[in-house]
Image (cartoon, rainbow, N blue to C red; front, side, top):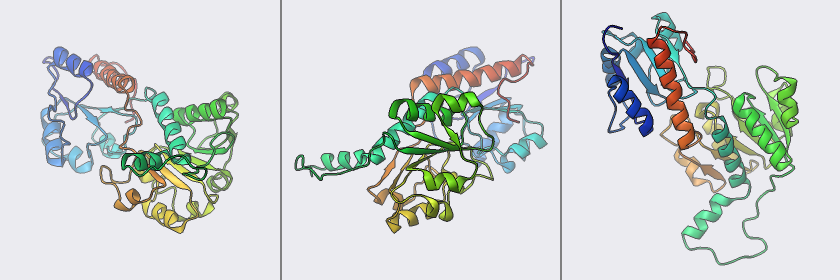
Length: 324
């Protein structure tokens, strides 16, 4: 480009990333950190050469097809990109990048935190203590379930799924099963003694804990629905740090109301930031506000990954993390 690129950033990013973007290219920041609606995103698409977007931006076909349009790159801050209509982006020749591989360890850590919190009823204990209702130690108070030595079923065995498997096996002596679109390498299986189970319902029927790590696609929408909850063991726990729409929340609520299901620990929701009010009423449901990658280390690494894609684009080099 003969002129400096016009870069618009849709949400606040870590200070170091914003400073670099402004100092290097004079990027336009969203200093109020308010989620942009379709009208505002359409305007940004008309005014920017590069849009550094996030998962809260509904970049659907209406936004991508709108005219005038000057944007030449969507640099997504995040691994998931189901908020972007990739078919529409490909149709108009608009490249899209993401930031894979930099949040694996932190999301895996949070998965273990959620697993322990729901099994040991830590969420309930914290709430009891804070409202001043704790009357002291007693033998039958808030009895939870042991995590060590139990069976963990992992749905989706990519980077994060494998990192969770290593923690579960090596740290907690868990028996790890997994199902995935493709079977992992022998080395990946060996590192966590994970056993491949081809059928989802077979895995569900054998697992004390089920942890979701699959991407959000048309095929995985409501992957865990009524029949899947029926297939789960009595007292089993569901952990979701993947994407909210992988779980049919109405079916989850029905399973919780039925009393067979042990509980759930959720970091993501279908239609977030809206959270189904019923989910918040169950004491055996642990809820967090999408904190999977919420560490300074991960968020800065995500930012630098987006910057690398932008710089490669400006140098007319192959994009390191192109998804469309």
